Amino acid sequence: QVQLVESGGGLVPAGGSLRLSCAASGSIFSINVMGWYRQAPGKQRELVASRTTGGITNYADSVKGRFTISRDDAKKTVYLQMNSLKPEDTAVYFCNADRVRSTWSSRRYDGPYWGQGTQVTVSS
Image (tube, rainbow, N blue to C red):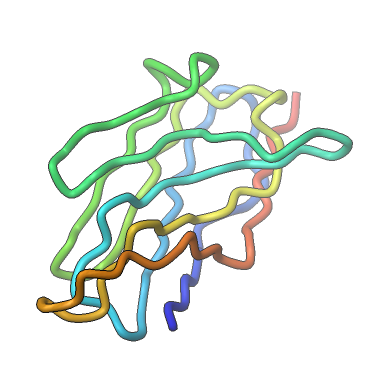
């Protein structure tokens, strides 16, 4: 099993910055994809950003140029640096880990796994 623990959410004025962190623990040899999703009230959960072990990133159009995803694979941690925040960025942000191998010899990829979510509120 894999556990994901997020931190770094909070209340920030429009134009401000926040940095989210998500640490993975459990039976992990490698995590192919780590990312962040968000869900605003009354809306579906949507991808914010993801990053593979190979460095391939994917961003939602609404956050391109403002958010940056990074990883520290030695710490099994993914980060989301959020700059120039807007009120429409207000949501619960969820960490995601997918295609997880538990050992070096494992041929099975598990996931996706989700964190419990952290609230980000941007005031206007």
